[in-house]
Length: 452
Image (cartoon, rainbow, N blue to C red; front, side):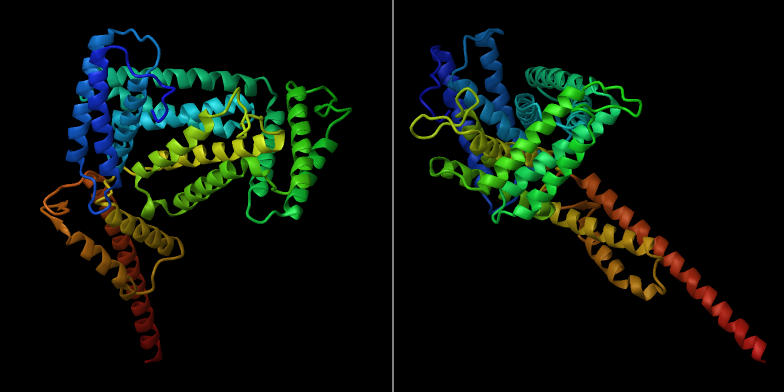
C-alpha cells in the first residue's frame, strides 16, 4: 500500500470503500501507538464493526469476483492484520479475528520452508498443532463473527494445510533412522547461520559444528546411508544432498566470517536489528510484549522479503546477491518470522490491562511449585511472604472482578483461575508445614517423657 505500483480501484464505489478503510487503518495505528493508556476491548470492537461493515459493502460490489489486486485489498489486509493483533492484545486470543495474523505468519513460514526445502519434523508438528487449534476456534465462531471473516479464515487455513501436507510428504519418504539424521543436519545448518550473524564471529564454534558434519559423513558407506545389513535407507540421496550443502555452507561461513558487502549492508543491519529485538521480546515477553507491536516488525520484514526479484536480493544497481549474502539475509528473515510466530502462539488470553497481575501470579505459582518440589517449608512462617502477596492481589478485586478504572478487562477467568491455583498451592504447603510441626512436637514430648 506504500507504493504507486499497486493501482487504485477503478470502480468508484471501491474507491469510497478504500477511503473509509484508510480511515479505519489510521485509527487502528493511532490506537496502537498510544502508550498512555491500556487498549480497551470496546474501543477495538467499534473499529472491528466498522471494518466488517465495509467488507459487506465490498462483497456486494464484487459478488465473489475479483479482477486483480488493487490498493483496497492491501489496506484491507492491513486492517485485518491490525484488528487481529488487537484481539490478542485485549486477551481475546481464542476468537476468530485473532486467527488472521497467525495464518498470515504461518503462510509466510510455509512459503519459506517450501522455497528453502530445509525443515525438520518439529517445524511441521508445531504448525500442524496450531492449525488444529484454529480449526476449533473457527468451528465455534459462526454465531459470533462475520460469515465473510469465517470463510476467509477457513480458506487461509485450508491453503496452509495443503502446503503443510506437501512438505510432510518429503519427510515421509525417508526411513525413520534417516529422519533423525536429517533433523540433526537442519539443526547444525541453523546453528552455523546463527554463528555467522553474531556480533563477534567465532571460528571455534563453526569448526565444532563442522566436525559434527564430518562425523555424520563418516557414518556413510560408499557415500550412502545404510542399515546394519548394508541396505540403503529410503531417502539416502536427500540426506546426502543436505549433508553436502551443510559442508559447503560451513566452508563459506569460515571463509567469510560474517563480512557482508557494502551494497547489502543496510538490509543486513535492519534485519539484524529486527531479529535481535524480537529475540529480546521473546525472552521478556510476559512483561514487555504488546502484540500490536508485531505489526511494525511484520511490515518491515514483508517489505524486504517482497522486494526480492525471482527470489533474489538485489543491490542498488540491480545486481543479484551472491550465495553467501542470499542465505544470510534469508536466514535472518526466516528467524524473525519464526519469533513472530512463537510470540503470537504464546499470547495469553488476558488483556494487557490485567497482564501485570497475571504475570505476578505466574511468578508466584512458579515459586510455590518450586518450594513444593523441593520438599516444602519447615514452618508456616516461611509462607507469610507468599500469603501476604496473594491476599494483596485478592483484595484488588471488586465484587470478584479485577477492575481497571471503570472497565472490566478481558481475561477475568484466566486470572481468577491462576489466583485460585496459587491459593491451593499455598494451602497444601501450609497443611504440610502444620503436620511437620505437629510431628516434631510429638517427638519432642516423647523424648521428654522418656527422660522422666
